[in-house]
Structure formats: C-alpha cells, structure tokens
Length: 85
Image (tube, rainbow, N blue to C red; front, side, top):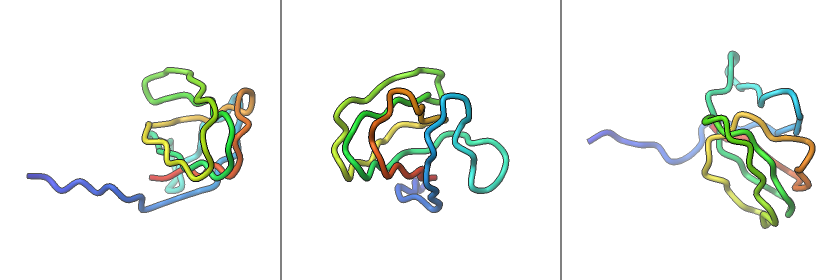
C-alpha cells in the first residue's frame, strides 16, 4: 500500500489575480495547490479541472481541500490566503 502524505511541505502567500496563476514555489508551473484562508470572506478560484467557482462565507482558519491554480481578485474578499503544496 502506498504512503500518502497529507501534510503540506511548502507554503506561500497568495496574491489574488484575475489573470495570473499562483506561481509554484519550486519554479515552473503550479500543478495545483490547496488553500488556507486566514480571514473570513468569499474565495473565487480556478481549479485544475478548469472550473471557476466562488466559495461564499469561508470562515477564518479554513483549509480548502481542492486543487487550485488561481485565486481571482474579483470575487475574493477573504484575506490571509496561503497556498500549500
């Protein structure tokens, strides 16, 4: 049985953008990351599957277990967002 690591090994602050994907901390392209949301609000994301979705009223201190390429500036009011790989 394969061992699956459930903890992140890398992290970086996210700057929401309508045009730029979250850069990978190791260089190259981001293959998808999960998010930590520090401050309550909405989070609009682009998933690795190409879906644009807005999560409303995300509580402070939430880990979002979805694979994300981009956090949009428009539609995002949450603060303290951190990408985790």
